[in-house]
Amino acid sequence: MAIQNTILRGPELTKRQFEKISRLVHGLCGINLHSGKQELVKARLNKRLRRLGLRSFSDYIDCVHADQSGGEMTAMLDALCTNLTRFFREKEHFVHLARHVLPRVDARSGLDKRKLRIWSAGCASGEEPYSIAMTLAETLKDRLLWDIGILGTDLSSTAVASAVRGEYELKQVSEIPLPWRSKYLDVVRTDVQRRYRIKDSLRSMMHFAKLNLMDSWPMQGAFDAIFCRNVMIYFDKETQAKLVDRFSRMLTPGGVLFLGHSESLAGVEHKLRYVQPTVYEHP
Image (cartoon, rainbow, N blue to C red; front, side, top):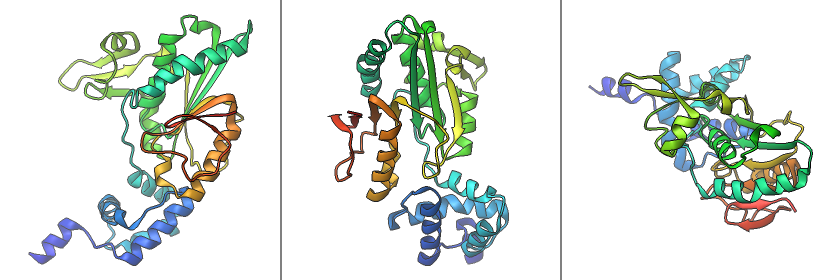
C-alpha cells in the first residue's frame, strides 16, 4: 500500500530541490518562487516527471540542464506559469482605453492615418488582447481609417498557440456582452461542445509571439498602451523596477501602462505618472 501511495502522489520535492528549481526559474524568466509555492511546484512538475518516466526531482533537474534544445525548460515554464484570465477582466481598464487613450491618439494624429499600437504583455490564451480589439472595434467608428496593431506575447508557448487559434468554449465567452458575440465571434461547433472563434476582422489586428520579458525585446515600439496585468506579482522589487523602466521607454508620450488590480508601483522607482490605481502614464 505504501508503494502504491507513493506512485499516486509522485516523488517528494525536497527543500533543496525546490531551491534549485526556484533559482533556475528566476534566472530564466525572473519569476520569484517563494517557499509557499513548493507544493504547487511539486504538483505541476510531477506531471512532467510522469511523462518523461523519471523517478525523482533530482533526475528531472538533471534532465532540464542536459536538454540542449531548451525544450524541457520551455515545458517546465509552461507547467509552472499560471494563465488565469478571462474576457474583459478588470473592465475599468477597457473603459479608460476607450475614453482617454483613444481620443488622445486621435487628437495627436491630425489628418494623417491614425496609428495605434497596443501591447498585451502576458496575453495568456488571448482573452485580453481580443478584449482590447473588441473595445477598439466598438469605439472607433472609422476604424478602417486607422493603422492598428495589437501585440500579444506570453512566456508560455502553449498559451500563445491557444491565443493564435482564438477558439473558446461557451463558459469562456460568457463575459462578452451578448450583442458583441454575434458581431465578433463565429460558432465553429454546434454540438454539446459548442465553441466560438474570434472573427477575422479582429484577428487581422493581432500578432502573437512567445516572449520572455527578461530577454531582449525585438519590438521597435512605441506603444500607446501596454497591458501587463497580474504579471508583476511574480517578480521581486528589483526585477519589477527594471521591467517598468523598460516599459516606460517603450511608451509614446502620454502612453499608458495598465497593471493588475492586485499590483502597484509602490516601493518601485519609476518615471511614470500615477493616474489612478493600476494606471500609469508616460509624462
